[in-house]
Image (cartoon, chains in turn cyan, brown):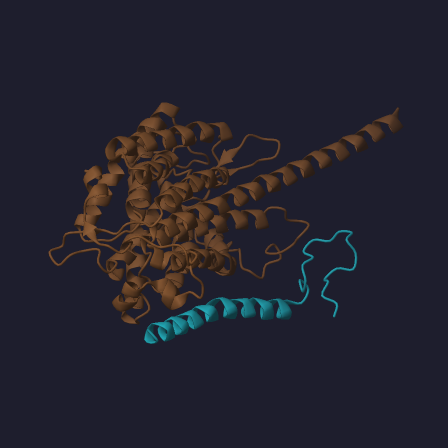
Length: 54
Length: 451
């Protein structure tokens, strides 16, 4: 899989992975958002479980 | 001759280009190290909170603080930076809104040496606000509820205040000449008042208050660790305050409002304010915890005008803050509010002193681009804005979390201790025999000393 948006460093600007593939950028962004906020939901469930067990 | 001139012109252009690039990279390096130093603030708060907790809660307090840092980074990337760059007019984004996470500047880019490093510095400012709040609520807040509140404070609320009053075209600056170079209002007041709003809904730790309303001292398990943590925060503040001014390659430094300044100005007044704060708190309390808190208070009390004060002014302001703020802590306790580390007095009131003092002692300093000069009225408007901006979201969000059962750890769990319930490891080895750490004693030593 070629993740590079550039073929040469000459004149390169934004060169991060998938910079030329907005759909994939958005996929990783949404995945990051899901991890961040999903973890809080998991934390809430874990805490409820822990409190109920004590 | 013409050939020599052409060669010289070419060399001059190359030198200018090299000089500009060198300036750009020096700027990057400067903010890189400011950001690194600011991590010391978080490390300090971590030590401070764990030291202030009882043995049964020490790791839970640490986990909460570490998570605040971790969650601040992605959320500030998702929307914090966008809020700063786009909401400087108020609650609606400006026409030139920017800072979305899918922009080409929000990742490695050879044409942009600035965005990443400024985003990083602001992310660490955000982490500082979350840490300020974190200490106030130790030993009885649920992790999930805490994280929601920390994200709200660090990646939404304070940065909205930053866009309004810590931005070259923020409405508080443009309309009122609000001056707060060291973020006494936009960071410390907002975080302190946010914490107060949450504390009203969260309630005190079990055993803090008696039925008649009198308070018990809940003793920190490791005061030396707490004091060391506070000193580490001071170290980090040199990164924080360095990050408050703008490196202009080839030109004089400017502050966040575009007024010329120097790092020397910040060095004079930060140290003088800090020293005054220590002395003021020592005179009032004789308590090393409050002396080091006084160091912070002294910096905040001088923070808004760090760029312009005559250093003895900063010293006097610091002394005043260090002397007065411990009394606010005593008053807060008498009001039945359990602020475990004094976050509201130290940051909320310390910041308030800083913002208002700037209107008294720095009034008349000119602004740039036709904006009003520094004035007491502008500072009062700014202070009121920061207090409301911090308190209201903190109160409303924590009230909703309380209704949803996501705010407070049940009392019987608090009595057992959070570590044994939620943390898979123990803080201290098996041969460590804790003393009577959970003994509730009448409000005595520290409160009496503060009075």
